[in-house]
Length: 308
Image (cartoon, rainbow, N blue to C red; front, side):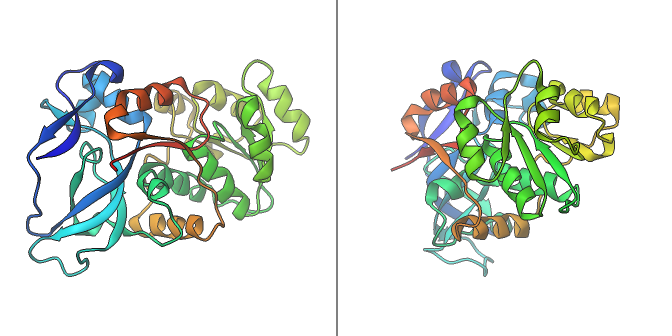
């Protein structure tokens, strides 16, 4: 037997998520089995567990269901027809509703090799936020002529997006809670606080104007971009698609980058060229406490579950 995080009914993560014993899975044809080292948390996880309509959107139609998407670990079984991986390879990737467990079965094609400089926790938290940050930044073809506003800039997507935007040469402004302002400054980002008066604060630090908004927060931040005179085609949100549709705002993201782009980002983090902070680590059994911290917000980077 092995362990997996599951939910048997819909409800708050603090009520429905539990660690249960399940039969140990084995790799089938075209699959590998990964002994999980770390599994990252994402807001979509608790939304799937809470809202049946969100679960349906992710093709989860029957309960009980597993939980989580992002994982890292070591391949310990290789199925028939897999020539690209071998037992002992260190990998990371994502598999929706299977990641938070001792073992994950994965199609060989979805995995990425873990470079030595990338920690298990970083690799295990990278799939969704890494793909999303890469895609949203790449969608705007940034140059040194751009001044970019990134909202929720210290969070899992935002902290990567600000650094990728900086690497493109842009001037970057980031919204965050005050306790994260010094950290953003250390990344070369101009921090501003959320809340009333946001547009005025942005104008004060960017008299040259803002040309791009990468929104990871929601409608209020999209509206701030519009109030700043940013062309809607150069506003991209991952946080409020209905509001975006009303205003012609782009919605690139949602884990859209390719496996190759995810691998490239992993190499940048491993080399120290991009920072990817881990806010907290919890043992698998403390999954409810981990999600309570995630839902409290104002994080710096990611939260992960570890299996050992």
